[in-house]
Length: 396
Length: 165
Image 1 (spheres, chains in turn red, blue):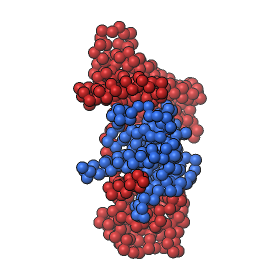
Image 2 (cartoon, chains in turn blue, cyan; image 1 turned 30 degrees about the vertical axis):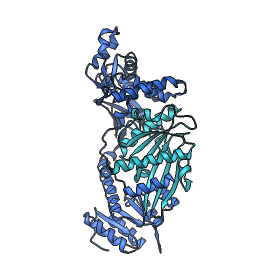
Image 3 (cartoon, helix red, strand yellow; image 1 turned 180 degrees about the vertical axis):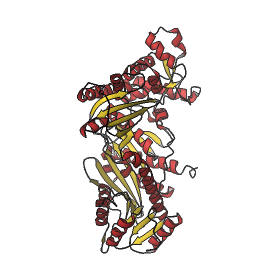
Image 4 (cartoon, chains in turn green, blue; image 1 turned 90 degrees about the vertical axis):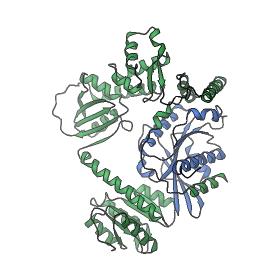
């Protein structure tokens, strides 16, 4: 044992001694981590049970030791099952990599390793554990997530299947709502200004935003009398309908504005109401949220206004004045017209976007959606020369 | 020994597995959804490629586990299949939210001629400095290699932007 362990921040290493290991231990200690080195699997298991190290780094196999067997022991005990495990191995065998993934090993490093890389990986895992611990205070009595990955219908289905009771808290933009479930059955729904049935129908098509489910007993009058089966089937149809319309539109975060010519054109009262929302630039989603209409109706209306040219897309970095972009745009249109019959729906998606932007020769509706600054750490553990070697190999 | 990992993501029926078969020395299938490929670059460096089928309505992939070490990804869709494009958009959005690694959105035109001169289309659908759009032919190994070379270029430019003049 090389240093005094600290229960919360100790890193357990199971490996044979050697200069590479010494260097790793030194690097870990330099980042204020306590390191414990053990060579025997039974001693390592005992240590884990008593001290629960923050991360375990284990060699896959060395004489009288099987990393896989050790991993199974650790993961089968509820006291140690949450400890992240990094496996190190000498040969980068594909089946080892697959095995490690299938077993749920948290990370995999090939020897000889760069100690800095191992240290970085340990810190990534420590951060993940920290954020998991933070979330667990909420997760202990519920679950939460993103509506793009799990929509409202899926959440209700999951609760119905488990006959769960609780409140689904939903958040999309500046709108919030709640759905109350008792023993898997929907009994009430709430959005300010809406009747329960209307609120529920509204929330079924929320495909963006976040949710949090608080599992708890519900003592509330039944305000929704339609059965789950009917609601879920209606919800699935609504989602499909939403997706069909949305796919013909630019992304929901595209900024729109009422066109200058809109005031001279005849519009219906409902269209006028929607156009009023867009006197100042707003995203499609903001317009839907501000509208009193249900989401699908609002989306259809926006689609119609866009196709009539009464609403136009705006871009922060429009290069309408760029003569080169203008030429490129005209060339693209020319080519599209010539080869229209060979074009897929996808081309027309891009082109429709371009068509709608007479003031915007970029025609890049995807750009605002995907160019968000995510501020997530990105670190390539390969050097520039490694990347050049990969490129050379692929060029052969 | 250094290892680089690249995720190649597609939806049902797209040509993402072809990418592994075209470039890897060894390809193994672990289950119906993940194909593993290994490409030895030299004795000091190995590239692992994972081909994953991910349809947007079926969220069964533990991305955090698989993508932990990825240096970049390729999201493949069939240029003539709207559903696969919708899946690709979903995955691109998911990757953008979860990871910061560079990505190529790759449209497979198969053996058909390119719908337009890519030089003309590219400025219209460039995504962000770490995300590029590329046409490729999923049935042509040369075209596949060129796709991976593009990804390597994007990774180099994104990760080492200060060092590349």
